Image (cartoon, rainbow over all chains, first blue to last red):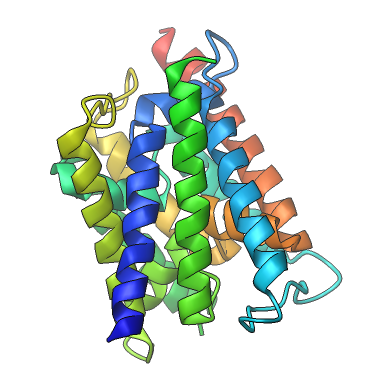
Length: 135
Length: 143
């Protein structure tokens, strides 16, 4: 019960952070990815803040809290990782949505999110069904 | 520093804190695409914390949307209709699971832990994002 509440609180912090940071606004994300005009640097500040806090916490608490290790699965980077990340980047640039903000915007009943999220579930299903991921 | 950058930094810290707390409680790397993706598999046993984390995420965004007009500003970039969002959703779902993570799983958690794969993945999806926006804007919007 306590764990469930703490996980809900973790999600609450995450979702509030996404909305506060402006990352739920697709025009801000696309504004970062668009180097051609009037560059919006906000996303870099969000990543920076998140990385500093998460990284500091991880390395301080890694042993004490038995956190997951940080070894890569193999020496070479897999083809799946590269192809998957290219595809993700394309989809990200198209809509300005990555999974977190798309889910967060369900809270605003935003039409784009209401279409994006079920389609994202379909994409996940295809990857799991035909590419053997998430086993 | 403009307000948007300060809010970005503060919001980013909350995202980092939420990810850290979720990792401590679950013992897993709490990337959103993985938390969401594994929920869809019938064989996943630890669905409880995934549901709690994602409902918390939606509730947290809901709260902010209510109290802040800035946060509630959700503008659709030029030229992106609902078909584009449908296609983008499909590609993002497929790509993040094939690549093993998204902006949070690779970009925040994996990079923050110093995982080599995640650093590579983040550089790759960032580059693909820059190229996509450039092509979309120059080919589709210019015409």
